[in-house]
Length: 553
Ligand SMILES: Nc1ncnc2c1ncn2[C@@H]1O[C@H](COP(=O)(O)OP(=O)(O)OP(=O)(O)O)[C@@H](O)[C@H]1O
Ligand SMILES: [Mg+2]
Image 1 (cartoon, protein in one colour):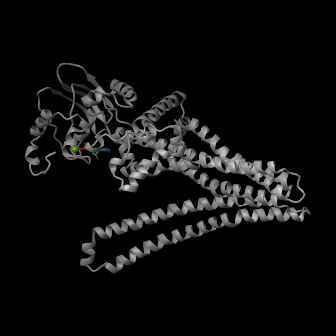
Image 2 (cartoon, rainbow, N blue to C red; image 1 turned 90 degrees about the vertical axis):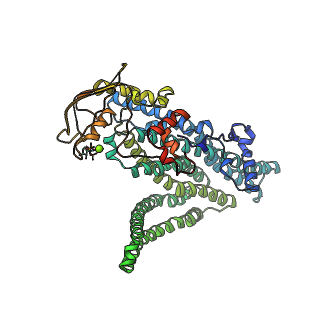
């Protein structure tokens, strides 16, 4: 259901035409910056998304893999794993980016200090190095600084795209699933949960992928650097490294504590916002009875409780950040101090190299590793939540009940649904092909809750034939709407069968409009046919209602 705006053709994405140099240097972004420099950017300046980023395509791919996984798990009698398909979808790109980051974060961070060591040694007294050697070392330092400049940004872009694509694919899957949820499943979930899944949970993928390689970089760096530092300063290296590593469990614990506090803060913020909302809604009554003061006290109390949590997490953050300042420096000091105590002579090149090594370790071990561990554990929780949602019961709307537009151009996921529908047609609602349209209901029974005791539709039998008007009457809550749901396959039958010939249109007891124009609501995705549209509007006696509407659409 695209709005008229979205149908407007956007400019093609510049990356699709950019050559390799332009892509490497991001020169293709310049025209957009120039436009932004001359005037404010507008919606029309947006480009078409790249084909590989289209949610339709990404959702199709992911959904296909998910359905395959569900089938395979059914055969193997195990739980389907969403994590498995996420890994399957991303491992190739992850391996490629792992190579890049290994080059940037491990090779260069280790080679550069070695080059520095060579260069400093040239200036030391009594050296026998030639000037050419010194230039080679200096060149090495330069190259080591240049490579990250060119490699880091394409790497970041690639890894962010990976997270973004996964997020889009998941959103698309969740969205499709939400439209297929059965009535019974709708009872288990709430709109709030779906919104939360599509806004909060899927965002974890973006952040997690950005940091994901840090999970192995830190430990790999530690092993290599420990060996090199041992070569350089002997056992003194382990004293400094020990100091650096000993705090990591403590930092991990602090990280966990902050996430617990964050959760607590969020609950209290929710509470305060709820209170404020209620006050604003009922402000007239509060004013009328002069209840401002007691309500003021209530809000202040809620806010104080919230601030208490924020302050606690503030203290923890302060301790964590202070580590960054003294941690690596103290390690360098301890290493060199113990090296001197062991009776060795301290040389400048050694100090510089140790300092660079520890600086690299400080970033990866005390900043990124605790963060990535928290991120991954949060993302795993989200994956689990998304999986639970994807496993909810679905409606099985027979194809004959779908609109003609959808039947012609089969939409994604239709194959699976078609298969499922066929299975269901055998047991529940049978679509019969015939000239006449009819509904034959034979001895059906149904209940909403599988665990519920009694069927509330019991042995219902009747026929509705073409050209007849049938009215079902009964007290409130007797199951009239539920009976209609059985035709739509929204409520499964326990017994009996329903035969349907022809197409059904259903007008719900509770009207529902989606945000858009009246015409879009009436068309509901169908192509606009002026004559048919007018007929429908006339038949529904809407013309009179349209008169006061300015645009009449
Ligand atoms: N989605 C649902 N999940 C669980 N129970 C439901 C659901 N919808 C309806 N029910 C229950 O099924 C019973 C029949 O409800 P139904 O809406 O079919 O009654 P009705 O005859 O259409 O009532 P009304 O005259 O108010 O429209 C009620 O007890 C209701 O609580
Ligand atoms: Mg009803």
